[in-house]
Length: 211
Ligand SMILES: [Zn+2]
Ligand SMILES: [Zn+2]
Image (cartoon, rainbow, N blue to C red):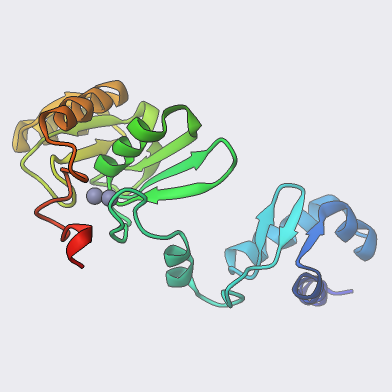
């Protein structure tokens, strides 16, 4: 069987069966695991399927085949704190201990989520404000309360390199800090405000009650 035929067959099975394990695919096609891994990698890049632990799964919601970047982005949903749609440049993603993934619109809401959910969070990634690169929030360099407020207030921006965060802070103010400092920064800020709703989103989004 030609590789192209094999991949077509693989997608047909997935369509019918929902998921396929690596072992099953190896047996059915009589090829090595290596070959299946390559096929899955290629098909995943084309967004024809989703790789799961030990196999592959069909894409749901009509996101099969072709370029559906937008659909996939919106399938991630809106910010778990303030419900606005996240932008790529500020995205903060959270993976919970149960494997569930959630997104926040910016590091501000990401850190708010950390404050709220604490030890339910297994992993968090944040975006470098200048390069757009995702990196671990725990290792990120934070600029807290600068005058650059692209999303929620007070502004929290993240950088993957210390030097860049220092230059940014010189130019745009605020204070430098690490992950723990960002948590502390928001904790203090929250205690200043009354506990009526989310104090940070006021002045940006309309309060939920008025929509
Ligand atoms: Zn938000
Ligand atoms: Zn935000």
